[in-house]
Amino acid sequence: EVQLVESGGGLVQPGRSLRLSCTASGFSFDEYAIHWVRQAPGKGLEWVSGISWNSRGIDYADSVKGRFTISRDNAKSSLYLQMDSLRPEDTALYYCVKDICPLSSTSCYLDYWGQGTLVTVSS
Amino acid sequence: SYVLTQPPSVSVAPGQTAAITCGGNNIGSKSVHWSQQKPGQAPVLVLYDDTDRPSGIPERFSGSNSGNTATLTISRVAAGDEADYYCQVWDSSSNHVVFGGGTKLTVL
Image 1 (cartoon, one colour):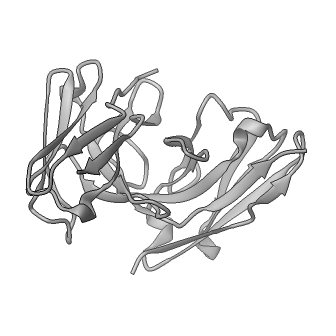
Image 2 (cartoon, helix red, strand yellow):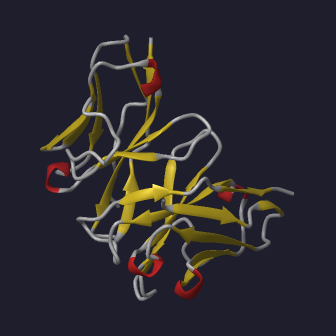
Protein backbone atom coordinates (compact mmCIF):
# COMPACT_ATOMS: atom_id res chain seq x y z
CA GLU A 1 0.00 0.00 0.00
CA VAL A 2 1.36 3.40 -1.01
CA GLN A 3 1.76 5.71 1.96
CA LEU A 4 3.01 9.28 2.14
CA VAL A 5 3.32 10.84 5.59
CA GLU A 6 4.06 14.54 5.94
CA SER A 7 5.48 16.21 9.03
CA GLY A 8 7.09 19.45 10.17
CA GLY A 9 4.16 21.82 9.97
CA GLY A 10 3.31 24.29 12.68
CA LEU A 11 2.87 27.92 13.62
CA VAL A 12 5.64 30.23 12.46
CA GLN A 13 6.08 33.99 12.36
CA PRO A 14 6.27 35.87 9.06
CA GLY A 15 9.81 36.01 7.71
CA ARG A 16 10.89 32.85 9.52
CA SER A 17 11.69 29.41 8.10
CA LEU A 18 10.22 25.93 8.31
CA ARG A 19 11.23 22.57 6.89
CA LEU A 20 8.63 20.02 5.87
CA SER A 21 9.33 16.31 5.46
CA CYS A 22 7.51 13.50 3.71
CA THR A 23 8.30 9.84 4.31
CA ALA A 24 7.17 7.36 1.68
CA SER A 25 6.52 3.63 1.77
CA GLY A 26 4.81 0.96 -0.28
CA PHE A 27 6.54 1.77 -3.58
CA SER A 28 10.01 2.29 -5.05
CA PHE A 29 10.50 5.89 -4.00
CA ASP A 30 13.60 6.37 -6.15
CA GLU A 31 11.68 5.65 -9.36
CA TYR A 32 9.15 8.48 -9.23
CA ALA A 33 8.88 12.22 -9.25
CA ILE A 34 7.24 13.70 -6.16
CA HIS A 35 5.45 17.00 -5.65
CA TRP A 36 4.31 19.39 -2.96
CA VAL A 37 0.77 20.71 -3.37
CA ARG A 38 -0.86 23.09 -0.90
CA GLN A 39 -4.38 24.08 0.00
CA ALA A 40 -5.14 27.28 1.87
CA PRO A 41 -8.06 27.07 4.32
CA GLY A 42 -11.31 26.88 2.36
CA LYS A 43 -9.51 27.24 -0.96
CA GLY A 44 -8.50 25.06 -3.89
CA LEU A 45 -5.37 23.09 -4.68
CA GLU A 46 -2.18 24.90 -5.64
CA TRP A 47 0.88 23.09 -6.99
CA VAL A 48 4.01 24.29 -5.17
CA SER A 49 6.98 22.32 -6.45
CA GLY A 50 8.07 19.06 -8.03
CA ILE A 51 11.29 17.04 -8.16
CA SER A 52 12.32 14.25 -10.51
CA TRP A 53 13.48 10.84 -9.37
CA ASN A 54 17.17 11.80 -9.54
CA SER A 55 16.75 15.42 -8.33
CA ARG A 56 17.93 16.79 -11.68
CA GLY A 57 14.50 18.09 -12.65
CA ILE A 58 13.14 20.67 -10.20
CA ASP A 59 10.40 23.25 -10.71
CA TYR A 60 8.60 25.79 -8.55
CA ALA A 61 5.41 27.78 -8.71
CA ASP A 62 6.08 31.47 -9.24
CA SER A 63 4.54 32.22 -5.84
CA VAL A 64 7.33 30.38 -3.99
CA LYS A 65 10.27 30.56 -6.37
CA GLY A 66 13.36 31.92 -4.62
CA ARG A 67 11.91 31.25 -1.15
CA PHE A 68 11.23 27.49 -1.13
CA THR A 69 13.67 24.65 -1.88
CA ILE A 70 12.60 21.10 -2.65
CA SER A 71 14.94 18.15 -2.14
CA ARG A 72 14.85 14.40 -1.67
CA ASP A 73 16.91 11.61 -0.12
CA ASN A 74 16.18 8.40 -1.97
CA ALA A 75 18.13 6.33 0.56
CA LYS A 76 15.66 7.47 3.20
CA SER A 77 12.58 7.48 0.92
CA SER A 78 12.07 11.07 1.99
CA LEU A 79 11.07 14.36 0.42
CA TYR A 80 11.69 17.78 1.90
CA LEU A 81 10.53 21.34 1.47
CA GLN A 82 12.66 24.10 2.96
CA MET A 83 10.46 27.17 3.29
CA ASP A 84 12.20 30.49 3.92
CA SER A 85 10.90 34.05 4.20
CA LEU A 86 7.45 32.74 4.99
CA ARG A 87 4.43 34.97 4.41
CA PRO A 88 0.89 34.84 5.79
CA GLU A 89 -0.32 33.78 2.34
CA ASP A 90 1.78 30.61 2.66
CA THR A 91 -0.65 29.41 5.33
CA ALA A 92 -2.02 26.10 4.03
CA LEU A 93 -2.19 22.36 4.34
CA TYR A 94 0.83 21.00 2.47
CA TYR A 95 0.44 17.67 0.69
CA CYS A 96 3.17 15.34 -0.52
CA VAL A 97 2.00 13.78 -3.80
CA LYS A 98 3.45 10.97 -5.92
CA ASP A 99 3.74 11.23 -9.71
CA ILE A 100 3.34 8.22 -11.98
CA CYS A 101 6.52 9.17 -13.88
CA PRO A 102 10.18 9.52 -12.91
CA LEU A 103 10.19 12.97 -14.53
CA SER A 104 6.97 14.95 -14.82
CA SER A 105 5.80 15.58 -18.37
CA THR A 106 2.72 15.79 -20.54
CA SER A 107 1.68 12.17 -20.12
CA CYS A 108 2.12 12.13 -16.35
CA TYR A 109 -0.18 12.83 -13.42
CA LEU A 110 -0.40 12.73 -9.63
CA ASP A 111 -1.77 9.49 -8.29
CA TYR A 112 -1.27 9.22 -4.52
CA TRP A 113 -1.61 11.93 -1.87
CA GLY A 114 -0.52 12.09 1.76
CA GLN A 115 -2.81 13.47 4.47
CA GLY A 116 -0.97 16.79 4.65
CA THR A 117 0.75 18.90 7.28
CA LEU A 118 -0.59 22.30 8.30
CA VAL A 119 1.57 25.40 8.11
CA THR A 120 0.30 28.57 9.73
CA VAL A 121 2.21 31.80 9.21
CA SER A 122 1.12 34.42 11.68
CA SER A 123 2.53 36.82 14.22
CA SER B 1 0.72 30.43 -17.58
CA TYR B 2 -2.00 27.95 -18.45
CA VAL B 3 -5.37 28.49 -16.79
CA LEU B 4 -8.07 25.92 -16.06
CA THR B 5 -11.59 27.17 -15.37
CA GLN B 6 -14.19 25.17 -13.46
CA PRO B 7 -17.67 26.20 -12.30
CA PRO B 8 -17.63 26.80 -8.53
CA SER B 9 -20.61 24.55 -7.94
CA VAL B 10 -22.84 21.96 -9.54
CA SER B 11 -26.02 20.57 -8.00
CA VAL B 12 -27.82 17.39 -8.97
CA ALA B 13 -30.59 15.20 -7.60
CA PRO B 14 -29.80 11.66 -6.47
CA GLY B 15 -29.87 9.18 -9.33
CA GLN B 16 -29.30 11.87 -11.95
CA THR B 17 -26.18 12.63 -13.96
CA ALA B 18 -23.68 15.33 -13.02
CA ALA B 19 -21.38 16.98 -15.54
CA ILE B 20 -18.42 19.00 -14.25
CA THR B 21 -16.53 20.99 -16.85
CA CYS B 22 -12.92 22.13 -17.01
CA GLY B 23 -12.11 24.81 -19.57
CA GLY B 24 -8.72 25.67 -20.98
CA ASN B 25 -7.18 26.91 -24.20
CA ASN B 26 -7.07 23.91 -26.58
CA ILE B 27 -7.34 21.59 -23.59
CA GLY B 28 -8.30 18.83 -26.00
CA SER B 29 -4.62 18.56 -26.92
CA LYS B 30 -3.69 17.79 -23.31
CA SER B 31 -4.30 14.87 -20.98
CA VAL B 32 -6.73 15.83 -18.24
CA HIS B 33 -6.91 14.18 -14.85
CA TRP B 34 -9.57 14.49 -12.15
CA SER B 35 -9.39 14.20 -8.37
CA GLN B 36 -12.15 14.01 -5.78
CA GLN B 37 -11.78 15.59 -2.35
CA LYS B 38 -14.31 14.89 0.37
CA PRO B 39 -14.48 17.19 3.42
CA GLY B 40 -11.52 16.73 5.74
CA GLN B 41 -9.82 14.23 3.45
CA ALA B 42 -6.94 14.26 0.99
CA PRO B 43 -7.74 14.24 -2.73
CA VAL B 44 -8.20 10.91 -4.51
CA LEU B 45 -7.59 10.37 -8.22
CA VAL B 46 -10.83 9.33 -9.95
CA LEU B 47 -9.97 9.72 -13.64
CA TYR B 48 -6.72 10.00 -15.59
CA ASP B 49 -5.80 10.57 -19.23
CA ASP B 50 -9.23 12.05 -19.94
CA THR B 51 -11.20 8.82 -19.67
CA ASP B 52 -9.39 6.14 -17.65
CA ARG B 53 -10.40 5.05 -14.16
CA PRO B 54 -7.94 3.89 -11.48
CA SER B 55 -8.75 0.56 -9.92
CA GLY B 56 -11.55 0.83 -7.39
CA ILE B 57 -13.27 3.80 -9.04
CA PRO B 58 -16.84 2.95 -10.14
CA GLU B 59 -17.78 2.86 -13.82
CA ARG B 60 -20.24 5.66 -13.02
CA PHE B 61 -17.28 8.03 -13.38
CA SER B 62 -16.41 8.84 -16.97
CA GLY B 63 -14.79 11.63 -18.91
CA SER B 64 -14.34 13.36 -22.22
CA ASN B 65 -12.01 16.00 -23.61
CA SER B 66 -12.29 17.98 -26.82
CA GLY B 67 -11.64 21.49 -28.04
CA ASN B 68 -11.54 23.87 -25.10
CA THR B 69 -13.50 21.76 -22.60
CA ALA B 70 -12.92 18.59 -20.63
CA THR B 71 -15.82 17.03 -18.75
CA LEU B 72 -16.12 14.69 -15.80
CA THR B 73 -19.45 12.90 -15.84
CA ILE B 74 -20.88 11.08 -12.85
CA SER B 75 -23.93 8.97 -13.58
CA ARG B 76 -26.46 7.72 -11.03
CA VAL B 77 -25.18 10.25 -8.51
CA ALA B 78 -25.37 9.23 -4.85
CA ALA B 79 -24.95 11.16 -1.62
CA GLY B 80 -21.45 9.69 -1.25
CA ASP B 81 -20.34 11.51 -4.41
CA GLU B 82 -20.75 14.89 -2.73
CA ALA B 83 -17.26 16.41 -2.80
CA ASP B 84 -14.98 18.93 -4.45
CA TYR B 85 -13.66 17.89 -7.84
CA TYR B 86 -10.44 19.23 -9.39
CA CYS B 87 -9.14 18.90 -12.91
CA GLN B 88 -5.38 18.85 -13.49
CA VAL B 89 -3.04 19.07 -16.47
CA TRP B 90 0.67 19.37 -17.09
CA ASP B 91 1.67 22.67 -18.67
CA SER B 92 4.67 21.88 -20.85
CA SER B 93 5.41 25.55 -21.54
CA SER B 94 6.13 26.24 -17.86
CA ASN B 95 6.88 22.71 -16.62
CA HIS B 96 4.20 23.18 -14.00
CA VAL B 97 1.31 21.10 -12.74
CA VAL B 98 -1.89 23.15 -13.10
CA PHE B 99 -5.13 22.65 -11.19
CA GLY B 100 -8.55 24.02 -11.91
CA GLY B 101 -10.19 26.05 -9.17
CA GLY B 102 -12.39 23.14 -8.13
CA THR B 103 -16.11 22.41 -8.34
CA LYS B 104 -18.26 21.61 -5.34
CA LEU B 105 -20.75 18.90 -6.23
CA THR B 106 -23.90 19.04 -4.13
CA VAL B 107 -26.37 16.18 -4.11
CA LEU B 108 -29.80 17.66 -3.47
